[in-house]
Image (cartoon, rainbow, N blue to C red; front, side, top):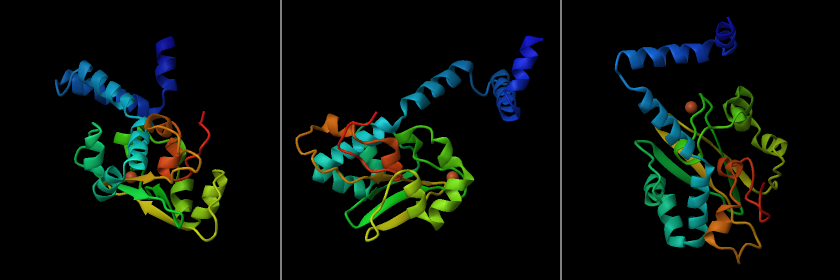
Length: 200
Ligand code: FE
């Protein structure tokens, strides 16, 4: 009885996913161990990867140039598999601030940032950030000066974007690892800036 209650509380899509997973395992399409391995691999993909790329780009101009030219190759260079997707790194400058979205669904550079936050998938963010990016960023606590252009980049099924935020002032003495610690998930999406003070 208890089990039935629990099953029901999982919701329609969770139950459908479990049922399909069970069927595919029964049919021998993949094994339970395959699923476990994939889940582990998924967990290892987190914003720390994107942060490492950014910190490297901040300290190594040649790497930055390679990353802007071919984001996928630059990710692979640090050992992060990108697969068949094309990764485009967008450089923030004092004149241009970049922000990413997928207006159609929720495409996200998962190979470098892991799973997207809930708000990124919301229709609210997806529809509004293209129309009124300055206001949306302000709601995230990020005020972009009026003389800075905001460019919104819409992801597609075979292409992903990641923002290369501006290196914060006052970080000249930091090493690459300390710099990576300043790069948050939100700054890689473009709804926040990288800040000099260590982030929680
Ligand atoms: Fe999408």
